Length: 286
Ligand code: ATP
Ligand code: MG
Figure 1 (cartoon, rainbow, N blue to C red):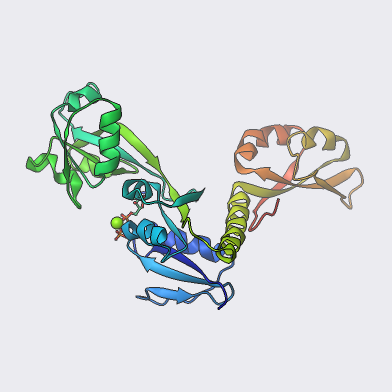
Figure 2 (cartoon, rainbow, N blue to C red):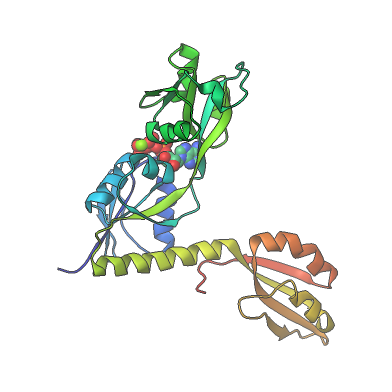
């Protein structure tokens, strides 16, 4: 039987859209008809399983799925025996402790003897232990933010991104205990063939990620400004320089990191560049 890589992703939730997008950007085509729990790729030996995110680490540990995309928060909380292979850069959030806004919070010792509602008892327990605080962890399965205002707990420990959910429930964020993003996890028992397929996918993922952070830049400049401008545009090996029809002018093409672009754009302009175009790159193989 030929080898197939089984990839688990979240069926519907905050990870789903970006997980699907990443797989598609890696050139893997499949039909994800609504409500499907499993689909086969048409141009890569892979199957995609659509699951609840909490179940993904367990399926990967058992080898039912070979790899999976899940939040680090869930992967760490479930504490399954899987490899974390690569950070994926999306679904960034943090696990934080929140207390009622009127609470005059001074530090983590204030939590001594308090009750804290959470869906992350393991990560919270580790954090409290590391800070030598004894608190009562109240595990609930959802709607954590409401716990303090209905008298169920003194504090909460939950996922935060903007903090607006905490605020709208009369809470303030006082400690960040874990920073998370989506990660690729893998079973520890992959066959050679499965490993090879995962490496192929990982190579594509990295090419997509590098491309996202870089832009293709074209500009016109006088011939004698080239040396100055090149200092800010080292490119992959070195920039391409093409003559313009107008004597003494050239077109310079290079690749630039998005962050460097904003830092250097003024210097590039002052050095004599004009007609600057910045174009997204779809894939980048280093
Ligand atoms: P499921 O039904 O699959 O169990 P869920 O309700 O447990 O889904 P979601 O709310 O979809 O989970 O969140 C999935 C993951 O997305 C979280 O574990 C976390 O890693 C990340 N996440 C959660 N909230 C945010 C947010 N506000 N911004 C960015 N990422 C987030
Ligand atoms: Mg879940």
